[in-house]
Image (cartoon, rainbow, N blue to C red; front, side, top):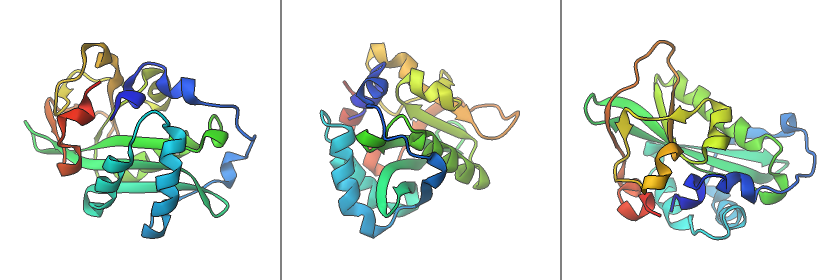
Length: 196
């Protein structure tokens, strides 16, 4: 499942020249049940070679475990991100897992993904969550404050060539990142989601 997000350059290679919209016109809000059909249409457009709808559906059915944000261009969802609330086993510290993240192909490279990430990180910080993890393209996520993670392991082993794709950042200044294994809720408890 995560191969499209983890493969080096995968996100960058999918982007197309956008329409030149003003990202300040994009409204970020919590997703609603009424958005579901539009999100189900958006993900296959953004990830045509990978079916993210099953995990998306399972995550959206567990609203207490997630922070789900939609970027709206007018009335239409132009992008979407989920942050899943997790813990790190050795310490029990609260953490979050970013993903999936998508933007409509015709609106990519406009800053919408970055705006979704920043808003989500700000909301998580307000909840007191420090560590945030992502399995994704290092070239993209490094622009948003993420760097290679070595202290906390993924719930399942990753393919050897995905090592740099497992990244993190801490939202609490001067906070030591925890070591251990990320404990994820049921929607992420499938080894296939973490494999090539």
